[in-house]
Image (cartoon, rainbow, N blue to C red; front, side):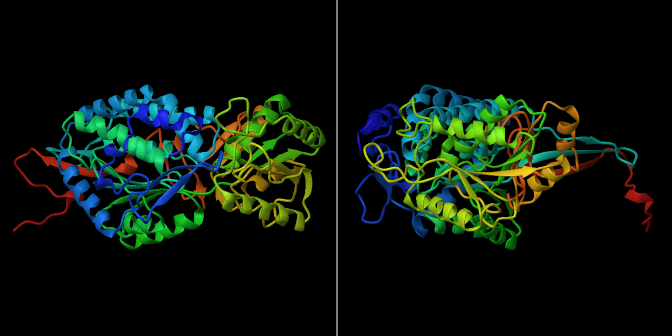
Amino acid sequence: MTNTFGISQSLQKIGIKPENLGSSTGINWLDSVETSFSSFSPADGELIAKVQPANTETYEAVIAQAHLAFEKWRTVPAPQRGEIVREIGNALREVKEDLGKLVSYEMGKSYQEGLGEVQEMIDICDFAVGLSRQLYGLTIHSERPGHRMYEQWHPLGIVGIISAFNFPVAVWSWNAALAWVCGDVCVWKPSEKAPLSAVACQHIVGKIFAQHGMPEGISSLIIGDHQVGELLSHDPRVPLVSATGSTRMGKLVAKAVGERLGRSLLELGGNNAIIITENADLDIAIRGALFGAVGTAGQRCTTTRRLIIQESVYEEVKTRLASAYSKLVIGNPLDERNHVGPLIDRDAVESYLAAIDKVKAEGGKAVVDGGVLGGKGFESGCYVKPAIFEAENHFEIVQHETFAPILYLIKYKTLAEAIALQNGVPQGLSSAIMTTNMREAEAFLSAAGSDCGIANVNIGTSGAEIGGAFGGEKETGGGRESGSDAWKAYMRRQTNTINYSTSLPLAQGIKFDI
């Protein structure tokens, strides 16, 4: 394991040592097996660690263990489950800096964003603690005398969680914290591109459950590639599969889960736009577009990929944005003086280069051209220049999501045209409008406005808070995670009718006398 940037020390502070890694989770340390996933940091190309992928036998053992754990966990009162989740949040507070550093180094996002990701985990634990006392059902008036109706919510069972590399821990926690207070148990398949961050989280939460005498299996981790995801998706013992990733992957999960009439919660691709009107505060608009486009090196599902700009302010926005891009500092994500880190791997770099070639071939004009950075500090080959192109919304490459810092500028005349352009892509995750005009803002938020699951005014497309339900429409999958009433996805609704009378009247006044 590399000692670069003090990652070894951070792992030790979290409590991860070779002897801490149990075989029941399908994990082994470093070179203990011939077949393994290698976690390389895109920051410097160094090997962090190797972990053993699970096989079918391991998968069966984990599912069996999770099922046994569910039988006990579902009987623990919800507020007591919330208390355990509260302690998990406190444990995360104690290791925030070290876990944030690991996330940053393994995934390549800036250290500030790594810290922010861990803070999201803490926040969702806090949210879930309050939720543990608010799993409300309704009371309903019966049409039959001497009867009472109500509904209640029960846990589903095993929740399979498939997470992506770009948020290697936060999105798992959105699902897990809610599922746990709802009485479910979780089996987590993290991205094979960032497995060590998942190992760290599993170690942290496993200690808390053990301290409370809870059985292993409430939180399980299975390292693996798409084959593990296929096992979860096809397994009728897993009533809910929550999957975050590409639209292509989500369609495969939805098909597999749907064929067995299970539930899928899908958070898939985004192709997010900001509309900048002639009434925008351009200082705010430029800042919002800048972070939205280059944060996490363009590797967020909520990354701003299109700017739809009113023609009267188009040239000013283009000039100011190009100037802002010239001030970006690219480099080691753990150096807080840098704004942009690397892409996750060289495959992502190839996709970035192919997208640039494609937009140029379709007629796009470079405002800030792209390219791969080399030389000292960029030895991993994963650092690229954030790029801006003038384009048309109908370009094939603009219609697709490229997970890289490429921003397309599109001109419009009327607000109705801008909204049509915003909606005119297959994806429907996040959207925003920059305006100081109330009528424009309200039109954008109306039923005839943005068709996305998230619609913002005078903030960018990325940076969602855990209090609101997160997710999108169309090819984004339709799932909702995190806040609001997203907890209902992790439970089953039951309607109850109680007859406390001495007769048995039937509903709808039906007579059935003998």
